Length: 98
Image (cartoon, rainbow, N blue to C red; front, side):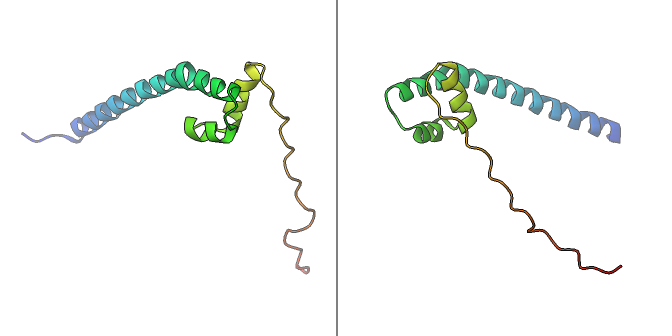
């Protein structure tokens, strides 16, 4: 019996749906671990004087995430540095003439 293209497509879509569902579950679990385990341990490490860069590295989070947690806990966080200014000019000059 020959399989028709629609059957192959349906099987492929089922495989995508299964993989997507597994991914969604893993992401949900990752979020739970981040909130319930990583966050409180990172905050405790800061309170004990551990270096914030090292905490971020080990926790696998960016500065905005860590410093957001610390602000939520009322721990001191220095203000964010302003973005560097772009120099004027620097682009291609009009070669002139049309």
